[in-house]
Amino acid sequence: MEEIENLINGFAKKCNEFLTKHNYKFSSKKILYHYTSIENFKKIIEGKRFVFTYYKNLNDTLELTYGYKVFKELLSKKDMPEIRKFEKNLEDLLLGNNFNSYISSFSEEHDNLSLWRLYGDDGYGVSIGISPEFPLLSKEKTEQPVVANVIYSEAIFRNDFNKLCERIKIIFNSQLFKKNNAKEQQKALNQLYSHLFKYCFSICLVTKHKSYSHEAEVRLLLRDGKYSHFHDYPNGFYFPKKRFLPMIRPASKRVIRFENDFSINSEYRESKKISLYSYKLETSFLKEIWLGPKVPNNTIINFENYLKKNDFNISIIKINKKELPYQ
Image (cartoon, rainbow, N blue to C red; front, side):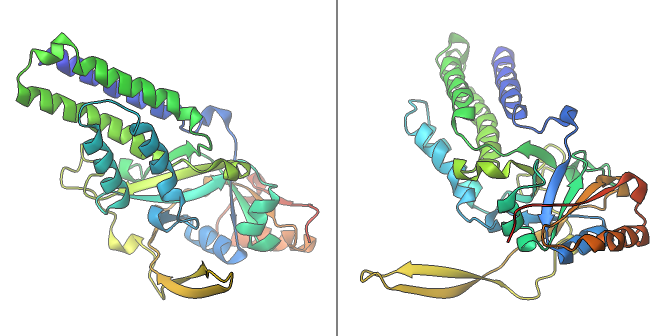
């Protein structure tokens, strides 16, 4: 089995190599921007922490399934051993409750009109520029978020995925594989698919439709659940309950229905949002603040005083006013 283990380890290495291509390039030293309201800005500054949203409760509920649908289409064209079982397992874990991801969204742009409208309180909010290193007071591995660029085109990962599938087929049909008994073959195949699974699942969490490409989004991801950090936590890792935002009331979402006679009916459905606080950050996380285009110019001094009050060194923080053609 040693030769097979070497092949499996080589496959795992290739999966990780392909995954890291999508990780944020820290060497670029680019500042990341988080658009938000003044109310939420104050919570971030006073608490020195960001909110990570449960991945099934993102603003666009289709985000979760978009990446899976892309892989489902690619998998439908593959002739590989037990591929349908793999596809079903991917769906179960992505849409099930044994693996949880929490996402905080940033952008590489601080002057995007669409982002001001959607997330920056329609121009009355701020864009917070932070260090991509996300300097936490904790060094625990479970607290360190993965930082990844969002993928807006399946072409970016399609070739890598095809190469990984082809490698599984080559290993499966090799003499090294076939000389093992059925039990050992099944074990090896399960290991290969577990590494492919990790690759697909991770890509799903950072894939969006190309129509969102103007956002230039960078995602920070935390994770917990039964199958999370299993090397260090065989029984699963879970964030403590005190780290989750208290639910004051369920969020309401408007659901629109178009009837056959072209009339429009709507109703509000309650959805429970689960959000997680990050671990507390060092004050060095804050690099810039851009005031929204509708924020008065004379408020800069108020922001400086507010930062001083909360123990930030304003001599190293730039506070700018965004001038945009914004109504």
